[in-house]
Image (cartoon, rainbow, N blue to C red):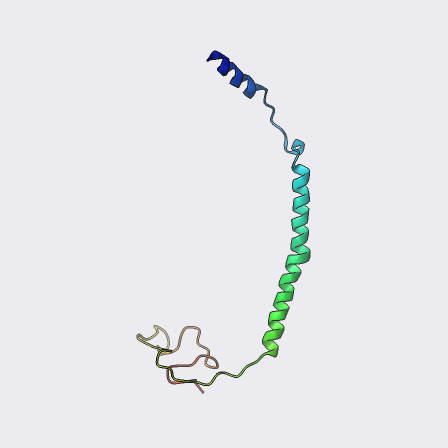
Length: 106
């Protein structure tokens, strides 16, 4: 039993703590940081900018008229009034695109 105690104590006392600069994976980690930084700046940000430009151009070029109002009985059901305004308009109501139960506003 004493032998095991000396063995573990000897192992812990002689273990050396490596400094951050001495770790063998430091250079590999630095290369990974450079890779992901470059991917972020040269791939991700331009990709986001292109997607935004594509969405803006397709939105401005593709303008539809509002669809014809068909009074389906299962749509635009009001069981209780909205707590704002006249109680018939939703909170983000757009009179050009959103129909009321009676039809579009003119």
